[in-house]
Length: 128
Image 1: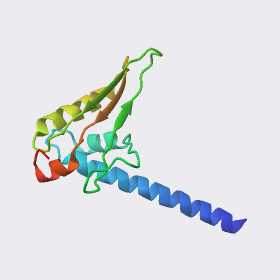
Image 2 (image 1 turned 45 degrees about the vertical axis):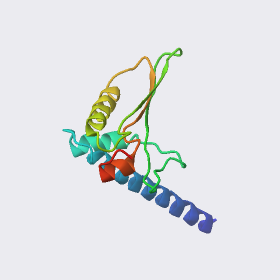
Image 3 (image 1 turned 180 degrees about the horizontal axis):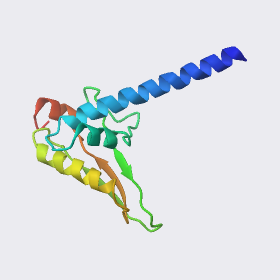
Image 4 (image 1 turned 180 degrees about the vertical axis):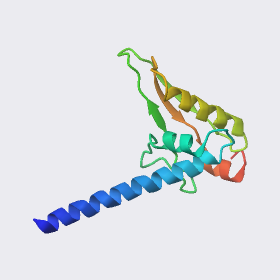
C-alpha cells in the first residue's frame, strides 16, 4: 500500500511540474508579443491556457488556446486567432487585450482564442 501511495504522489508532483513548465512556456510565448500587459497579467492569462496534444508548430512549439464560456444555453461559438503571419504583431496585441477583457466579463457567447497561430513565424518574424 505504501508503494502505491508513493507512486501516486510522484505522479501528482510530475503532473504539477509539467503544468508549471507549460505555464512558463505560455508566458514566454505571449511575452514575445508587443504589448503593455504586465508579467503578472500574462501569467494570469496563461493559468487558463490549454493545449491539445496534437497542437504544435512544425518546429514543435506548443500552440495554446484559451476558452471563455458563456452563461446562455443558446450561446454562439466564436473562434478568434491571431498571428497567422509572424511579422504582424499588432494582431497578437489585440488578441491579448481581448483575452484580458473576456476574462473580466460575462459573455453571451463561447469564445476560443488562439493568440499565436504561427509560433514559428513569430519566432523568425516571417509570414510563413
